[in-house]
Length: 144
Image (cartoon, rainbow, N blue to C red; front, side, top):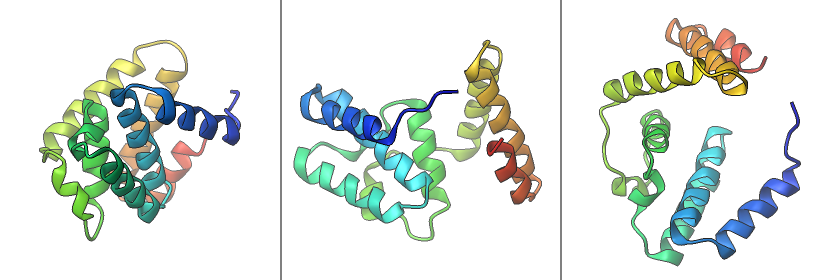
């Protein structure tokens, strides 16, 4: 599977932030902040959100404008010892209901041919291992 060279990803993100409409900019900032938080760079993620908010003056809820993005933020923030102050601007979610909705989303992806189905299957496998308390197996499932 071909991957996007890191420079291309960054260049594309900068291009969106500098030239796109507000909704596209907010989506790109949210994507970058989520990615940073997912790879263990929570401080960088928080700095990005704070800078975006200072620069644009837009409400933080715009970073969770889509259901899957809102679920991702809710799940990430639920496991942090101290949620950042900017997270108060996100709408609270019922994590159990959102987990059910996310599983339904993965099931729909799994029914499609191609890469989305493969990714959905890996996530489901990792999820099952994590719920059983087998974190090494969960990590291995997504590392395939």
